[in-house]
Length: 237
Image (cartoon, rainbow, N blue to C red; front, side):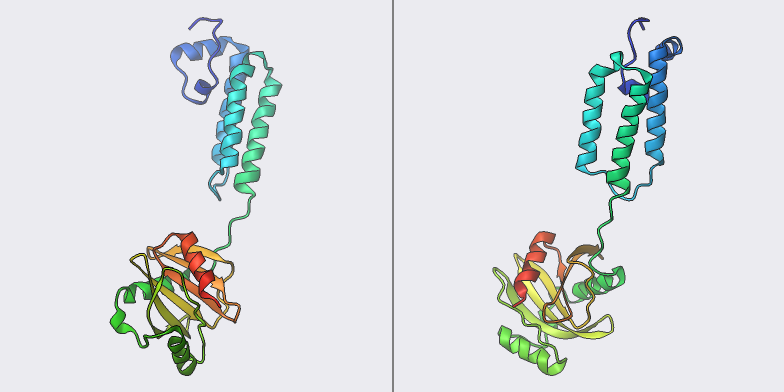
């Protein structure tokens, strides 16, 4: 390559061609940028991957790359190192130091609920009680001393319910049908929800919220998470 043509910034992060290596060996500016690029690449690769890079980090990296395309020929080595340090600091703050979202419940409980949902999915014959919401509520109040207090749900049908043991406690299980999907709603006596939200277990979405009347309310099925959380909120009187 022409001795006056500097190596592009993007190329410095990859293996150099023979012509580029010859140029870098003779060009102080490109040699410094090459060392900086390798240092940044090594440092980023060594960062612990506790969370995926957010859109904010990706935007910052892109902005720094675009800025460098026209600034590099006029920069000095110290500026290159400062820019690299800024990017690394941003990656650390947003990717590494950001707290991980707390799961709504422990994985073992979510797995048990998901498997129970799959066991009874589309099997309305397993229902111990069918009828109105009041009849279902009275059934559980008499059998397990717990009233689910299920409210009317928009565009969802109540199929029926039965008693089941979840986490060693008797819980009310009520089946719903929404948009052709079978959903299992669990009204549990224990406070098992650490935070309102959803997780994935046994190929099923498991979403949980605290019940204002005590205990926990969990919905299992394969609707989008925002819709399942909406149904959970709507199910409580």
